[in-house]
Image 1 (cartoon, rainbow, N blue to C red):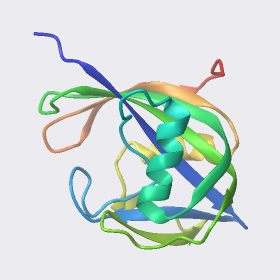
Image 2: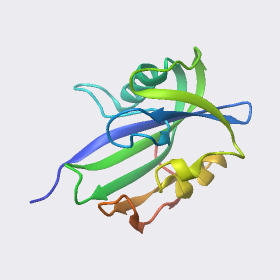
Image 3: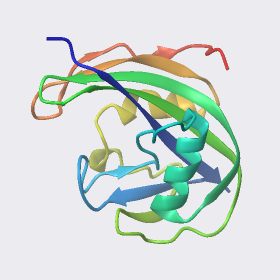
Image 4: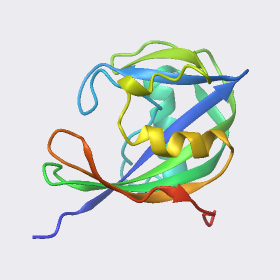
Length: 158
């Protein structure tokens, strides 16, 4: 039986040579530092979901963003496969606030905590930080180790 594909989002905010990440407090990825995002709600665009999830998870209101990447994630133990759209936040208002889901913290771009993040972040984050777009597929085993990775620089249609 073929799995369904769920669309999800991830927003990344950079300001003054620092990146805002949130430590996940519950659910999939608990304990990992990550960007802000999640699944779409009914009748919501990808951009609307990205902005809503960022506001809900850290209190930041996204005013302008652009697509930075797209990765298809697969794992046998996932209920569904995930197609995640990555966004670079270009303009925002508000200050990061801890929520029931995430604890936000600014990190210097030279000290990103990759050892406490999803393993695929090491592959797409350097491309993202060079203001380049990316795409690919990542397949995880049951322990979230990568068994396939095709992430590469790519121009995406907006």
